[in-house]
Image (tube, rainbow over all chains, first blue to last red; front, side, top):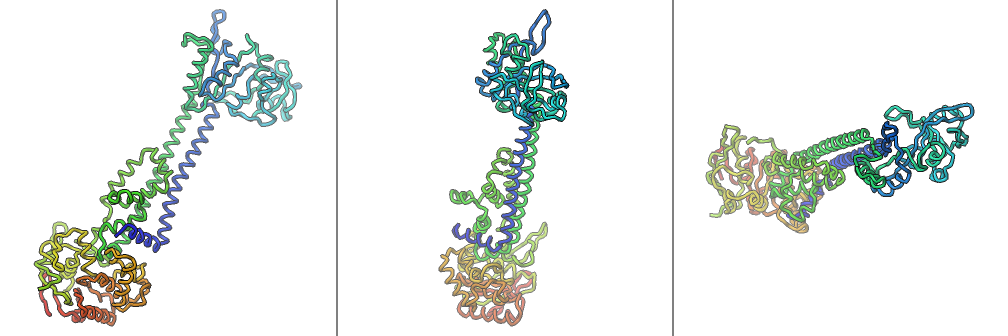
Amino acid sequence: MDFLQTLKIALRALRTNKMRSFLTMLGIIIGIAAVIAMMAVGSGARHVISQQIASIGSNIILVLPGSTTSGGLRTGSGGAQTLTSDDAKAIVNECPSVETAAPTTRSTALAVYGNMNWSTVVMGTTPELLAIREWGVAAGRSIEQQDVDGAAKVCLLGQTVAENLFGSDDPVGKIIRIKKVPFTVIGILDRKGQSPQGQDQDDSIFVPLRTAQRNLVRTQRPNMVGAIMVKAKSEDLLGKAEEEIKALLDQRHRITNSKDPDYSTRNLSEILAVAEQSSKAMSLLLGAVASISLIVGGIGIMNIMLVSVTERTREIGIRMAIGARRNDILLQFRAPHHDRRHYRYNPRRGRRYSCFQSALLADAHLGRVGIDRLLLLGSHRHFFRFLSRQKSSFPQPDRCTPLRVGRPHVQR
Amino acid sequence: MNRVISLTDIRRVFSMGDQQFAALKGVSFDVAPGEFVAIMGASGSGKSTCMNVLGCLDRPTSGSYLLDGVDVGGMNANQLAEIRNRKLGFVFQGFNLLARTPAVENVELPLIYAGFQPKDRHVKALAAMEMVGLAGKENNHPSQLSGGQQQRVAIARALVNDPAVILADEPTGNLDSSTSAEIMTLFTALNRQGITIIMVTHEADVAAYAGRRITFRDGLIIGDTK
């Protein structure tokens, strides 16, 4: 009896049980679709979470100037003025792991509008800083590169500053004075809330870097910046980016003793740790959910196989009584599930698979994505091994005594 | 002398846990070609066990069984399957047709396993159905046929491979008396054409159709009348 014949019998069996075949298929399809959907939703959620954590600053490195000693007093970190905006440009251009870098200056100043005044932090920066911090504008426009190049006297107000100076009025287009220098308000920033350290991040004004260098900050040299904020290309590249920055700055600043540089770098390692932990937890969750659904699906398939065999014991008996060999029967039950390649390449090998396994192979065939993911999780070997151990307990059609089929069961 | 079946001192012992039960305690008989044999006996007398041994569905614990001159005892499962396919035809009490398969395809089944081509199968199956008087019912499903007609399909299926022996296990057990008579008439007619039939029954009037009656009791033959 050839394979084609067996296939025909099997297909006919599927056709005669249309509803059951359809429901079985539906069950398997939904099961696999559920696993795939779960994986997709899971990786989406993971992406969103990692993005949100990144917006806090998990991939940000802060480069600060080193300390200086004046009159026997050491100023502490950031006291010296050693970093320039050229350093920032060099970091972007020469460190492959760095996405952008934004030089900043920081000063405290009094802002005045009409009869209102408010003392706040004035940050001089380039457009990149707001991009790094993923900070958009609520009204008006943001600082652009030409504002920086032309040292335009424009400013962006944080929400707190806008409320304190303007109340309910619209500040955009109005002129305020910062350290007695008039600035046009070009926009208002989104509300950012408090930093992890409890600082009100909305209590600040942003002006173009060069404007700040010229008008607001007193520096030894015109190009000096207070800090450089660097964004690595990804969280994983954070350490590498830091090393690259150190190497570059050592070279630029002619640091011979790398233990005593005139700058320091910091990353928000605490946030990074949180990010790593949450991504680990997400992976675990996804793995657990996927393996549970797969086990449930697998049990469903086992049940269907078992039902199909027990329900058709009678048919098996009839077929064997009229001369079917056990291989004919096994093939007939396997044929709809069987991955045909196994048969074509090695008919002997096909016989070694139990019905469970061949159903599973067919599954893997149908839902390659889901299974691929499982392979990644590394649990597949145990799963398959588990199944092959079950093989011996599977009811084997040749053990039935066909003549007794359809009659009260006689115990041997 | 020519023998289709030759049983010599067949014993069959079933073990249930530590208990042993001998269903056949040394059974010997021969069947010549063209005979119509009825095996009779009360339930538990061993007649069904004997039928299973005759049908190569069960192996005796000891004793020898020659079918058409061939010793069946040393054969493996696949060889036995082939013997069942080519030399034996089965008719059961419960008809045992595939429910959702047309009558003619039920009849074709043994030919599929014998490796016939689809066309030859169809021709042979139609011929067998005509032999049992079912011409025109080829495409009916078993559920659309009466009990007697279903049993005729089963007989056609048993005949289709030109077997040496037809084994019928209470073929009239599920039929009313008039249908039983029809089926027995059919068996008798087939027997007249030279087909060897061995039939298990416990009804004396059914057994009366057979030319020879073998009676079992407690695993032994107690009567063999021709």
